[in-house]
Amino acid sequence: MLDQLIQYDEELFLFLNNLGSESWDGLWLVITNKLTFIPLYALLLYVIFKKYGWKTLLLMVFVIAAMITFTDQITNLFKYTFQRPRPCRAEGVMDFTRFIAPRCGLYGFFSGHASNSMAAAIFAGLILKPYFKNLIYVLILWSLVVAYSRIYVGVHYPLDLLCGLTFGALSGFGFYKLHNYLIKRYMR
Image (cartoon, rainbow, N blue to C red):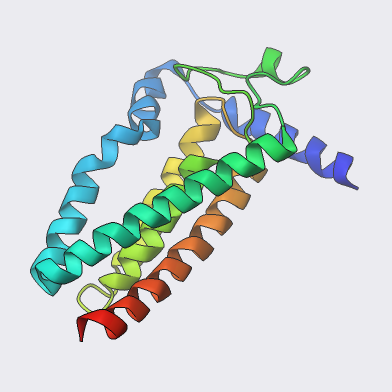
């Protein structure tokens, strides 16, 4: 059963990865770069500051730092526990992969890009929901695009992304609840 799932995952990866073309490679390399979205994060923090003020923003920055550290470290724990090679290193897959990423790490299960971007999307979307009710959907779509970029550049399987997105959504929701608890306990 697990072998069949892995085979389907590899086949879906190869199909999606090979949809790419050189004319789109530059765009997807920009999307997959972690630094690309610093302006988005800065804008979200600015909007949060305008809506909630300095005290809440400072608390939120600590909660966000804890959330990103948590998702990143749990992702690494999974990668080194399961040790599933990335497609750009996997025998029988790497020869058929369009690999355009600047580098290829050792292990890929599950995706840190997917978990971190989804955690940020859920957290920010829930925090700002009273002011922008549809923002969460835009941020989730952004996270899905970031996740797909990892297939496009050749470094993650779809299952890596699905698990990363799921973990990120749970983490974002959990840290949103933690933030609300801290606000009620220490800020009011």
